[in-house]
Image 1 (spheres, rainbow, N blue to C red):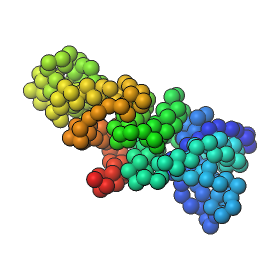
Image 2 (cartoon, helix red, strand yellow):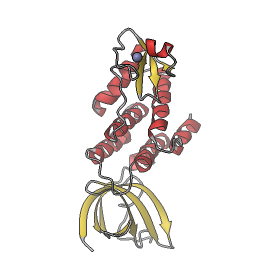
Image 3 (spheres, helix red, strand yellow):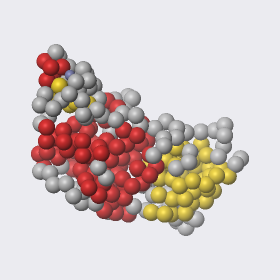
Image 4 (cartoon, rainbow, N blue to C red):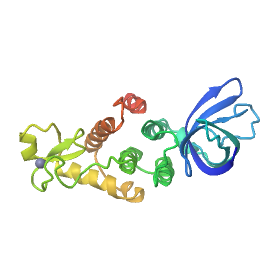
Length: 251
Ligand SMILES: [Zn+2]
């Protein structure tokens, strides 16, 4: 059994027996994996808080080549993301992000760029102003890395320009559609060009820039509706994210 080191972020945990945990981790080197941490729920566990939900840790694993479930030998906490657990809204946002990664990434699938994006996104959500806007930006960036980048610069149905001809956003088409295609029966949610510009910024800009954007509540709701509708189409079974329902109940 080879012993391997990697950085990991805890996506999900569940109890195993009386003192252990099964963890779903997104790791820098091996992508999404499941692993057992024996004794992790004992009061004086050597793992401390390093395997709590959202924790970013350096872990040492026994990789079992023929098995789906690996074994954690050591774990050192790098960042507990306490700020994500102390505020109910930020908790909901971070839960949405880890659920999205867990639902969309297959076991052992390595996705270049996803680990630093997830880590940087959780850091922004923990401390940033406008965490809800940061959440929608992070979701758009994550689905893009996973191959579902929304097309926001040309009509997704005919490929034609949308300047002056924007009809709206189509989750099924995966981007914006022009008025001609809208008239031909392509289904869409109408959006204004200001909303499109904001979506383009959320997709392209760094979190530092996004947290300085000023938008009103109604525009925020429009963005939320478009991004959640789009993500529902990206997820294979189309079941909505349970964390998004939690966010809606918080309003
Ligand atoms: Zn078109």
